[in-house]
Length: 396
Image 1 (cartoon, rainbow, N blue to C red):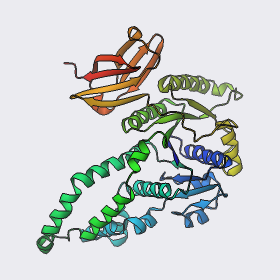
Image 2 (image 1 turned 180 degrees about the vertical axis):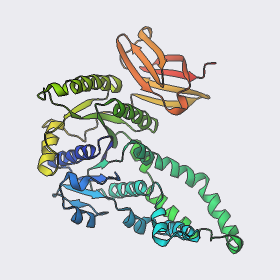
Image 3 (image 1 turned 45 degrees about the vertical axis):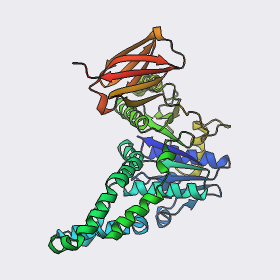
Image 4 (image 1 turned 60 degrees about the vertical axis):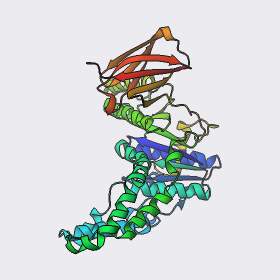
């Protein structure tokens, strides 16, 4: 099974790109699911479905045709299905503070519940071999980061905190419940947590395997949006995911030649050049601004024809090597950059703001640094087996 994760800016535009990819895959005879974990829930609109009918079907895939299905998560239904013990306990605690029942139920929807529910579905479908490809319409960048970091965070909690917490509370619960202002969580609460973790087993490795999961970053040719996309690229790399395409959406077509748009053309051309330079060797796809909204299956097919060549397979594995990775060796931070055609004498390094710049002749690669490394500077570098390793440390 392949997973294509669409993340970034674009709102409905991002959703339309994910939906068009699903349409193209179904045309290639793949059993395809487009799964939305974006709180905007625009998937029904992208396919121009009757929203009332669609939301009745939520939490279950809705067939568009015999090869294509769509699904949006309804967190209230997910709570009843997966989070009942946890949600009930949190609601009960909130009610002891004077919060009304309805408000307590709303506040009991904890951050991450929707993302983890989506991962459980992905894992379930993988085990069942129900689909060949799942296209994920992910949330905007910040929420996507939470989504991909969830398995690692939960795994750490289950190994280091969960056993101690469960055993400790089992021992003190009978006494503590007599004096505490609210009851401590029952053992069924921890049983619910354990069940959820079991349903997520293996999903972290699946997300980090480039033969299974690819990230497609959606951006617009605007400075603020591009900067956010660059940061997203850094953090997806940091979490071990492989970005294999950048999609620049809503570019003004060349035939729009009115003088009022001249500055937009100049600005967009400059940003596209910067995008191609920054993300190389990751391919950049350019998507024009359409003269109408992309709604409904026919217009999604039109978008798919712009996005993909006739014989192109959107699910093909095109990249397994990450352009760069971050690590720590012997207490020193390192950046490892893949440079297949470089030689030692032609490489220059320097720091510019929160980026490391690698220059080879007239070619430059800008590498955005995670926050833990922005205060550091390159101190030493070595080129071995076409991989440049740059040591970063604080320069006093």
